[in-house]
Amino acid sequence: MKKLIEANLYHSELVPIGGALVSRYNQCLKRLGFKPTKLESFQIDGIGWSPEIAEEQGDISYLNNGDANPHAIIVSPQQRGKPVYYPFHTFDRNIMKMVFKTYGIHISDITRDGALCVDLDQDIDAFYEPLDVLKYKEITVGFRILNNLDRAQKEQEQLIETFNKGNNFIDESLHMKILASSRKYGDLRGRKLQLSPLTYTSGSFFTRAFGGVFVLRDFITPIVVFKDKKQYNKAIKDSFHDVLIYHIKQPELIEKLREHVIVIYDLEESVKTKRYDRIKKFLFYEVLKDVDEKTHPVYDILKDKMLFRSYFNRIESKNRTRIASVERYVEKLEISNELKIDTFVDKDFFHALHRPHSSLTGEHQDLIWMLLAEVSGKDPLHLYWYQKERFYQEYQQWDNSFREWVIDIIKQNI
View 1 (cartoon, rainbow, N blue to C red):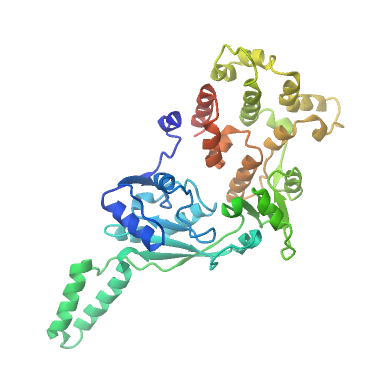
View 2 (cartoon, rainbow, N blue to C red):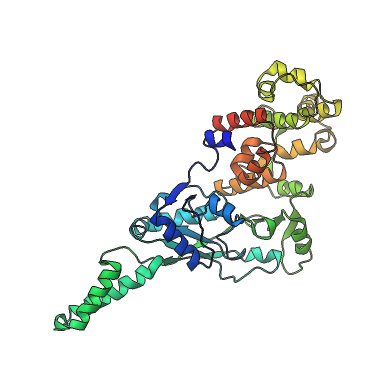
């Protein structure tokens, strides 16, 4: 990961946490029912998730009480606008944007001497069946302020209101109560500590629950796509929900997405794009590893057109045919339009060249790009953008020289 870190491509926008903020963060963890960290310093993202604590606890979802009950921790206003690196749901980013947009001033005030525990409540105690993910609709975003400063503020205001009535100013016991509150919490008058719950309505989304599920319910017929085969096998036995259910590796999935006008393809246009070039070179790299006596680094081979052609002619004939299948198909279309894509074009390559339909909203397009990156994963740039966890895992298996090529590609597109 050293090269990614040096290129600012690995967790580059985290907020450093140390000193008193560590104590406040641990108090939030305890209040949410989680184990406190033993780390004296760490970093957090926009939702309060820390890669160091996740590693310490061996759980990337350590801010969850089960799949149905995720949480956030806010200990610094610097978390505003920061990425949410491993959201449990794709809408978690939108929820945090909503929280900071609505209560940005309150958060700045509260985190002067406190912190916020945020509950993303679906009114679901736990998930039991895979299609329980369809219950995600209205999400109530609730807030708990460390040390109950909001409650203390109300009590302090009531004491002062009582003090200002009639002759209560001579009541010594009332004096003592006000002084005790002031010593413990400071003067809370005028501080912005009252946060009403917010409501977020979810549409289509991805959740890590049940091994990873895409829920597409804003289209002709709701479609649920499972990453985990066991959960998929459980879900298809369900007879109570009127939804289409697929496993991520089913070839029929892409066809159904085309039928529902969710994804499209245009091979004649695709071959002219940089994305096509990235996918072609990624597929080439996968078979280049089998070529003996490579005298050039992978980076040079992929960057230099003549070197690319030289090594392309050294790979097995079946692989050359596979990698060139799209270009050959497009060339032959000029002669005949009776060619069948599924018998001529490599399936992985074909699926990798699909894209979200242009009529979709920006949010839906991001979700579909994420799904397509999961289906194919042959575009290293989109893998980095939409499947970071998978990208980091695969990155560690790549040749050092290929890593340099991928880093160049990402940096050129930031």
